[in-house]
Amino acid sequence: MPYPLEMVQPMREELSRIGIRELRTPQEVDAAFDSDVKTLLVFVNSVCGCAAGMARPGLALSLTHSRRPESVVSVFAGVDTEATARARNRFAPHPPTSPQVALFKDGRLVHIVQRHEIEGRSAADLAANLIQAYDRYCD
Image (cartoon, rainbow, N blue to C red; front, side, top):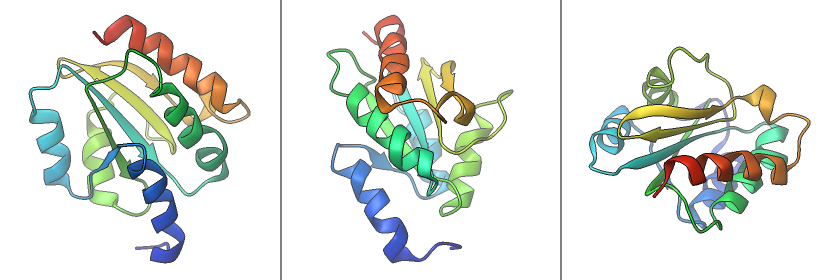
């Protein structure tokens, strides 16, 4: 792991405290996608400043909305590299970025937010973007 555990653990816990399940292996990623959930949100976590300042807080804020995905999971770029690669294979044709948020409905990618759409914006901006997608795709 390129990052020390003591550096990464608080970032993992920030998401687990709000009910996001972390996927650490390719098999866990496959199981999440093979489940019977109608809507799945995959968050690509990162150690970068925009993940800390905008992405994780924006995701948390979006999940307070009345409509939300049935399942919300994360992978950690640069930490759990095989799990992250497996998840990103499902994001094609979009290139990998960190952070990144992808929403799937019935196994099909319906909405994606790339790093360039997160950088320089606020957590509230990301939350608004995600809430629009939830209202459109989540029952």
